[in-house]
Length: 298
View 1 (cartoon, helix red, strand yellow):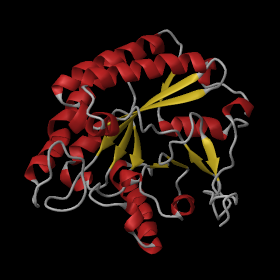
View 2 (spheres, rainbow, N blue to C red; view 1 turned 90 degrees about the vertical axis):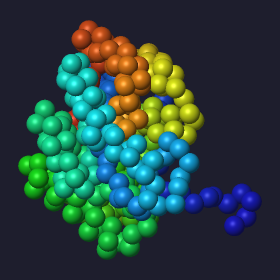
View 3 (tube, rainbow, N blue to C red; view 1 turned 120 degrees about the horizontal axis):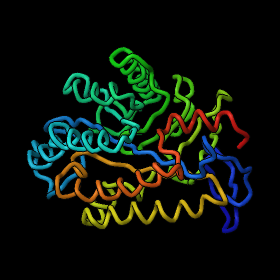
């Protein structure tokens, strides 16, 4: 390849400046859509991947496994109580291994009417390591499992560790999904090309307003992360006067469900709730965002 030849492109969407797009609004004339992506995950004991709060040990890595399991046993329930107090819906992003491990946790989110979003079987593995046949089986199997256990097949997908193969978007449409949360390239929904010709919507999912990269990788304190959420929200409300925007907040209960961080999360969500109560935003789920943009010219 010469020094000025074009570089490989993803082939899924063309470049388009946010300044050069059709205008539209969210329901009731709102300009900013806000959602919580609440990641409910299960990890294999003694093997595989997982976020770490301390140095990793030879398996079984009890320190980091137990810290993550705190989220399912305690932290998620603290967060659920907060969501109930504020009347916040969530997009519950679930590993299907939870149906065997702690089915009552998934049921608690399904019973309150939250959207269930498929997130692989376990976060102990990367989807990108699978063959195309095995990846197809994973996508189809997770969708069938959620439909069987919770009564409705999911429309959306988030890969464990945002890991994709070159054909993941194609396989998603071919197994019945309408949207993906894997890509963080925009503040508006984007239509992605697939080999079947069926559209796959990319709904913006945050990698900065996300507790794993901010608190674990960058070692921010809970109060700093909450301030980041508030600053993002306030700035996006102003930017949304010119363009309809989507703000996602990605949370993991073993991180933000820790009491000292939960206190700051409450402050940030209360700030957003005041704007919701004043009719200034659309507080929603990724699936509802996808359904809305499917009906407008974008």
